[in-house]
Length: 361
Length: 257
Image (cartoon, rainbow over all chains, first blue to last red):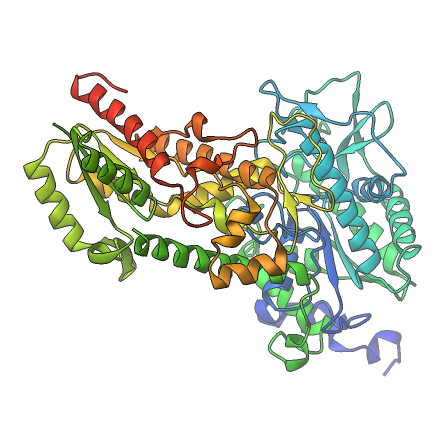
């Protein structure tokens, strides 16, 4: 019998053993993790909409999901969520492209200030062009807008400098930018604020090499401020909702995801501190026969997200949320915890006062 | 004689106190019937059982009887009334500020984070929304116009607050300090706007704040302070009664206030 390199490979290298002959729910393309998340590691997330699922699961699983920009404790939780608090590690909304990520870092450290700074609505409300949906109705005043952005950038800096692991989900290669200074917008001007102007705005469709360059610069930027950080990159399995290229959105989706997938390979290969996690493959792999997509063939089902996160937690963590060492992680924001207690005490105190009021009459 | 009825919580006391004073000095040319759903017979006025909102049966019976024997042109309610107190009277361990849309200068307090105005408004709407279920319930008894009375303004004077604080309250004050009047007034203003918006959505009128009771910082003038850090006094109750009488009289004449 001829000896050849494939003869001694493990099952996961073979389609039949790893994919075709396995129940879909047991498919595990991760194989092994490059590094482990320790229970007290501060895990930060950012990226496209699929990254929200990762954030949600990390939070629910009890791991030390790091949110550097939390809503004030007096704000009811469901409202905080509506205003973009805790959806990601800071209130930056969806970051679809590598260009946006790099830009956010530079802006947070005062190294870049876009010319197109704010969009003013007809009713006077102000929209942040770089997180246009963070306030459902925009900001109420210029002072509030400036102050909130300053707070936001401070939170981004805290995230950069204190996180142990940064999970970034690449979503798109397509985007829109300012012709004047290259500022990258998360959404085309005019969609969620502002007005599209072909003389001011230009369409970009990043090449894989450009994504790699952006991401390397972003990672180096972070490493320069946090030498312990490790990165996990993923590609969002969510197809493009629309393409600005004059071609089928299916073709554009395939290009975009392929370029991002190549970029992840370039970023992670040979780098011990950068791991690729195959959420894209888990959701879109043909073994799943599209079962992980909802009726619109775009939204990822909860079952699909659960498959992704089950593998993520299984491979990247030694302990699950129920283990004792996880529960020992202390809350980092003591003032927030104290404020929650104070609020409860004050509500009780007011009740008592109101009771006493009746006694004085 | 004009019939006034008001359903609510502890904020009814200044109204009742003012009415009694008018009775004593013979100037009460109307009937005032307060129905306290936070105390005594009607407590709890509203509660949740089997996953449903339920109302005090005794209150229902008495309210029905009252309407059978009296003819108030409108129904006044004074639910809540201190929503701003737990969140704004004492300094938060995590200091915060709010920038009102029309606020001149627009600089938050030193060391304080800002809570976006819209988020604070949404939060206050949530806080005042706890008693909204009363309105459809009251509509089961009558189709008369309903007016909710706006939450009274924050009490002024740190010394007054310290002097009249209960023991639990004192502990909080000693630990965190009393919040600046500027912040307390802003939170109160947002609570009033939130109430107004909620009432409008439910077809409920609002007896708004009374400018004559406010100082330059939009806090309650000292002459209207009650016996604690939360409630106004009977002088405030008199002004409020006058407002209510005016609204009720306008409705009795067939108009609207």
